[in-house]
Length: 145
Image 1 (tube, rainbow, N blue to C red):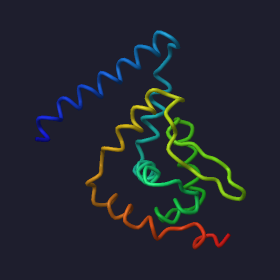
Image 2 (cartoon, rainbow, N blue to C red):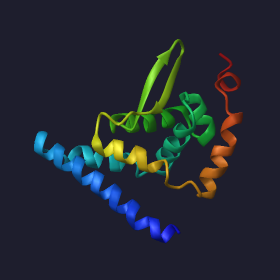
Image 3 (spheres, rainbow, N blue to C red):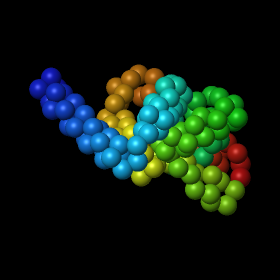
């Protein structure tokens, strides 16, 4: 069943991608930089993990830091790269800065990858373990604010 659907799915993804690419070339030109920015942003395993976590819920930097076991400054750098690529957005809420997946309006490349990443890597054992731990990672318990 999967083998039958895969070519259709790939064809749809590629068609959508090239249609959006054509529209941007026609209207804006110079698409290599934004394309590479998105691809580079997703070239790091930690940033892919952040994207997969944000598919499940909005998170603050301290929750992301705790989930990945990385320093706050490292988490912030990863978030900035994802934000600059148009893959995530943030909203301030008092003392909290909440990160979420972007709506994809900043870049057709980001929009395409945000949509497709939801279906990719769902069976990865490391990501499954990470996602299973998310309910126990709460900002109130980490930061005490």
